[in-house]
Length: 440
Image 1 (spheres, rainbow, N blue to C red):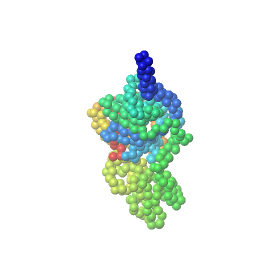
Image 2 (tube, rainbow, N blue to C red):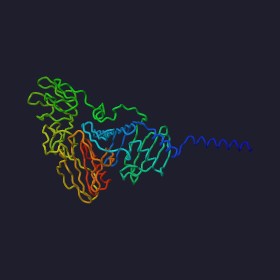
Image 3 (cartoon, rainbow, N blue to C red):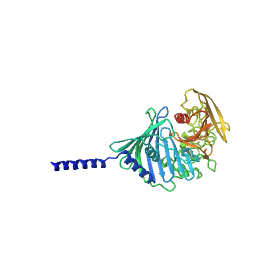
């Protein structure tokens, strides 16, 4: 009888030990995460981020590169609006790049140190390690943590993080507000530890010119051997250059350049697509231009589309051949869709910041603030020093104490939101709602 009892005890003990070997508690997983972070040299991830902070969900393709000790490259692409922006950190500083417009803005900042981003692995692990009241569960292939959301946006309260059991790579993240509403969702479809990057992967110029090889224009077609490839400016002989294949032939038998997407200015004569200019040569045709929007309510002669003040802004002069005058603004007004309670828009006026013309929207009521919009001429512009603010679709810089100014850039436009009485969470909501108005 004693022998049977001892055998039963041994069997039970072995079962308990084996069960313990097959599972981990929150403490052991956190310990392993600490080890992973301490040995982290590099990684690359791709995924989809959905923001539910506006009137309708905004979906972005996200790609993150990290190389120890402080090299970052985050690419955020809105496929619906065909806009890609890159946040880059290297030894020269922090850059916000808009490659398709050849625009770059440099900021003095230590981002993203101590400033969490939901798509950064370091931010997710730090949130797990810092929350002593973390909740922990397991699924078939994942460890799931429910922890405090360690982000600047005070409206984001908690987050759930799914990590792969095998290598602790992130798989899924949901960030919730105080009402348990899911505001941000990130799905990682690929994550690779120890990624080997090229020596110049985090170089600003390389990212401006080769950010997406498939989206780059094809080699320029020669225009009597003097085409200026990669730009919409005129070559030395005064003939407009382009980077796409020729479309139709002019009366002298030479092919004119057609561009599906043209970033330069129109020919001085402002010819319409498919028509011939007075010199007998067909002017450049464009199915889609990234030149500036025409004046409000006027018709775009290049495509027959009537555009209004809310049309998507872009670089260049007024379409149809008329150049923007010295006192004209070459982009449409972008209005935020979110207004704090008790606030109304007062007026819209033109303003000047340095050499750049822009517009200013003024709001008053329960809170008073202004939103200025500029299209800087410089390719590279040094931004203000301040604290970085995560806007979801891009990042901004908050400056000032009594009167705060939130500065950010998107699709070649610089925004400056200033107020003496708005709290930062409200400023962030307004800035995020600007995204709803872009491209409408």
